[in-house]
Amino acid sequence: MSVLVDENTRLLVQGMGKVGQLHTDLSIEYGTKVVAGIRPGKAGTTYSDVPIFNTVNDAVRESGANASVIFVPPPGAADAILEAVEAQIPLVICITEGIPVRDMLRVRAAMRGSNTRLIGPNCPGLLAPKANVRIGIPPYRIFKEGTVGVVSRSGTLTYEAVDQLTKADIGQSTCIGIGGDPIPGTNFVDTLALFQADPDTHAVVMIGEIGGSAEEEAAEFVASNMDKPVVAFIAGRTAPPGKRMGHAGAIISGGKGTAEEKIKALGQAGIPVADSPAQIGETLKQAAPDAG
Image (tube, rainbow, N blue to C red):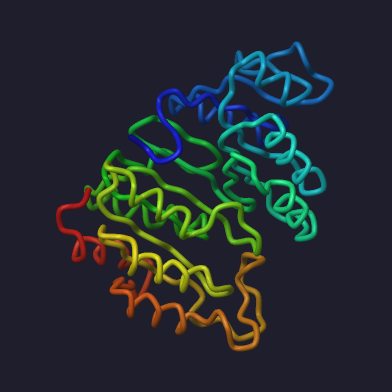
């Protein structure tokens, strides 16, 4: 099985502009079942044989979509998330970068008690090789089916880690980019719990970065709740305090959220930490020789 998706995943694309159309084509090319798209005012048309609807409710009712990916620009992205939540779509992945924090606070409040899982925003999405499901923007040609789960705050480093694993003949079960914004829908602990429960995931690569306390919380979870090997890498070691590096959540504030603090917490939990992105694959092979 794959985490969060399977061969029955039916994808809805919210935001069928040029970017949405490009990634619709790539997901279909990979084998993902893309069953509907949203582009207000274009209902009744199609794109690549995918029917277009005005609203998410219409799309879900007519297509049976059970997952959604959002390519809506920042001013409307929060409303797009909430429209998918209101339609009771189980899995929603928001790729959009630059959503105002106040909008995500509104989304978090509205999602309390919801059965929808949100991944993102500001993330690359999800790819599950066994299920042939690609949701978002991952470059699918570098992936290989296997037993290693990958979770990352950084999209680019997700691809770097996956490429290393594949070149080392280590396949992946599910790869999830959770994004680097201050208010993510799904965090490391959420994802690690899914990997721990997944019988087809035998080891995990976790890629963190400076800012916040997500990695420290993940370290505590691994130490208390996981029996599968976990290895990590922390980006941003050379970032000066108060300087944001890339993601909106990647900032050291008041001496907190430093790479050193995170590496120390991971080490205390027994999680090997690669010294550079180039060593992620080798670090995993040492910690879990049979994974892949």
